[in-house]
Image (cartoon, rainbow over all chains, first blue to last red; front, side, top):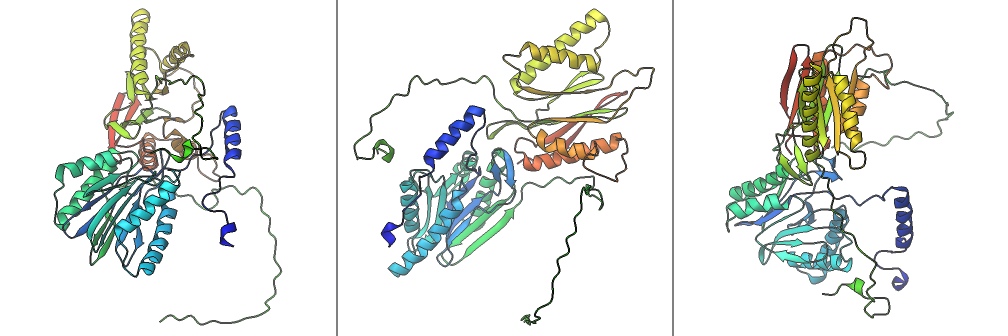
Length: 273
Length: 229
């Protein structure tokens, strides 16, 4: 039964889409694009573990679609793995798939999952889709081999490094890391460094903005610091822009009474303990 | 590593198809972002712009205002391609001097607007990539002239600002609202508030706001900080 089901993506509509796109461009319109978020994400290894950081702006072309979105998603809570979806909407689905796969794999091996295992599964999946899934990710975690940090690109290549940045603000963030990174930093110094790197992306990159989210992972704990820092304050407006009831014009009003009879009455007590 | 796309259905490497001459275009234009706004009331005019100059995902400058003072009664806001903005304002300033020397008086706002129209049309087939808004005061005539509050937004966040101004200044889409004429204080506050909102959602707008307030006393400037992210 399982062999009859089609596997992977269905490419049936590619020919139809190509014809549609040609027709649209004849008239001067263009087909809609997949939304890229434009981002600054960063990770580094410190004395006790790994810190991941991200900004919180999601853009639709050059308009801000979400001022406070979550870019740090967790793969496996019990084993302290977290990944940072980078630059596409594909990231959410990728993370969910990985989360279930990691759970199944660790049940099958009978061992806690390894960061390298997550990286391998992700890169094999991304390579299979030849870059059509536009996710760039940073995977960070602590396992029996110690703290590890990997970056994975949409075509399936990966790097294992002590500090990494990805996204449209990567250049701004990496310059901060290159200046001040040292191996085996203390927790507070490392948090400040990641915060400064993300802040550089927030101010110097138009695709990144709003707040800094941090995630500190050690072998014992995971600390998800949502909204760790807000380097930008929203401007205060001076005027009031409220509308009194009756301001909106009602053009037509139709009232349709619904004749309903009470058929049955039952009471269910809520447990408010 | 050869990618899977190089192989056809039967497993052999596909023939390479040459699709004809490929043209790599050079674009003479760039988009440097920025939003401009002008409001005219009964005895005042405002021209406001943000001060951020961008290109792609980067910021060139956080202090590059887009309002240019032309005379004591006229200010122009220019946004779009910064190269064309600078050239266009240079040309306008030169033409203003020529007019003053030959006619012995300064150009009025309306005359400047008409002249700008001919300058821009002269480049109909290789346009200046500039969004222009002129704000200014005209000399008072002896007779009563019909005036109404006018407002226009241009540049990258214009689509966000214009509908809000239609509602707040033009009282559009509202009923049972007292339609008071716009005072200078309310207009300045409104301009500050709409730019604060535009900076939230438009990545090209931010850093600072510069408002040029034109009254019969002359041109006064106010600078207000905006979001820098």
